[in-house]
Length: 226
Image 1 (spheres, rainbow, N blue to C red):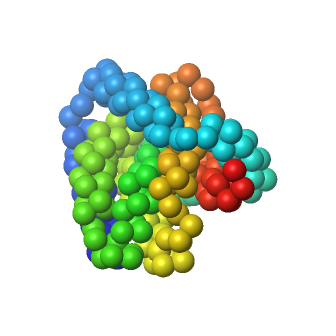
Image 2 (spheres, one colour):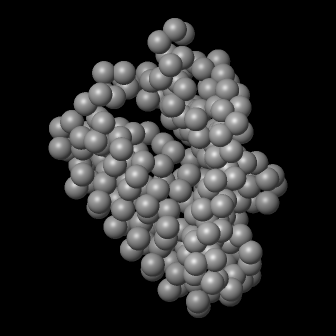
């Protein structure tokens, strides 16, 4: 679990630095930084989608994953969780800002091949190199996110801890089914979510991206038959 804890601390530290910087950044500059970051997130999503080898798996995963997410009301739960934290903090920020920062940054940090592959390497071979590299990227991203989106980004560190911690602990059971093809298809499906996230960050859409989270794991099932 060393790699997971390092990633957790890296996000906490990065977000903390971002919150300190936020106080000295004018709204106009913060908005410009946020839009630039949104475009970068879009590029990351497009690159990830291109790693998929079977577009039908991606389509089915996103469609069925969205249906499952709606039935489970995952987006509502995440928003409720973020708003609950905001009330606890008695935040004076715009209503829902903690929830938006928490949801957006959590998705970016846990959706992707490095989170899956790195966690499996940590659990199976005690090789933390991929997670350490991811931690560096996440810490820098957390600085930028927190400086623009606020304290909600800080709490996304716990999403990283839970998600990657679970993958690491269950690595022995997951390794036989998570081959290179499956991981590529998981990355492609997850990257569709990242593209949706970037559109939301740009203010172009209000997609309930969290409801599509089951889509990340459905390629495990579809790759057995397609």
